[in-house]
Length: 222
Ligand code: 21W
Image: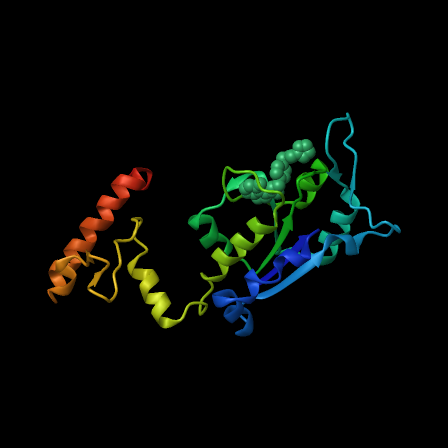
């Protein structure tokens, strides 16, 4: 899969995408990721990407010209163009699975400023939000989306990670985990886990997962 990101903050992307499973997916050639500075598509001395809103009001709006030029240069017919926006469709595992099927994603990481509506009408396939809280820009949401999509690419997870993932792809929260020592600071590991009775352990884990889900995320059981 190819993912291009258009951003005003390319430096924010150094780090999170150079570690762990995403790094390995890039090294293996499963993910071809390019971070592109929107300012590279300006032509004036000041590399202007924004301007004052028509109609007045606070803040600035991202100008259409750099975005039209950038998307024109980076997108093909088959590219899915996504604008990271607090007004977008809520990102979830179902959307991550859907996006993992695409050949090419182009993410536009918005800033605190709005984006000229003609960009959204003409260039953007979907607007995507990662949740109902206010961030300073769309860079972290773009990285969150890339992380969630990348681990779903065939071959991205190792055998161990992959089989663990399958056994937990029930829509429940996970049961509690313990490792050695069997007693730590007076806190004991539940006896059943030390029993060696695999049927009882499986039953206990199932009950714990259901209990936790009912207590913490009843919405998942609807
Ligand atoms: C925050 C952009 C608020 C726009 C006047 C002028 C992308 C995000 C973002 C941001 C506004 C996502 C304004 C969850 C997020 C993102 C920055 C609204 C403010 N007023 N998912 N400008 N949360 N956030 N306009 O914040 O770009 S996906």
